[in-house]
Amino acid sequence: MTTLDGKLLCEIFKSARHDEMYLYVDKRRGLVDVPEALLARFGTPLPAMTLILTPDKPLARTSAAAVMAAIADKGFYLQMPPAKEEYLLDLYRTPTEARY
Image (cartoon, rainbow, N blue to C red; front, side, top):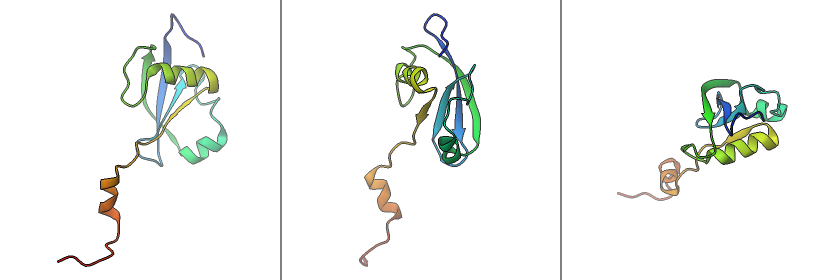
């Protein structure tokens, strides 16, 4: 990971296959460090945005420090979709008994 004064130029891709799944990479390295198996499962990476990350930058679902550490260690950070709330899953279950 190449940093300038503790900052990282990060490119974020969204998955073409999975809603709310994002891949963070060092913009200068691109997708070269992302394993082929992950890219096959992720689908076509669609550019979402480019950010300058600092360890204290607020992000919606994780800390920028965790993203920067993962990119330094593995070359990428994969943000998975949020877990579905149990009560929302009831909307998709088949009723087992009739209620009138």
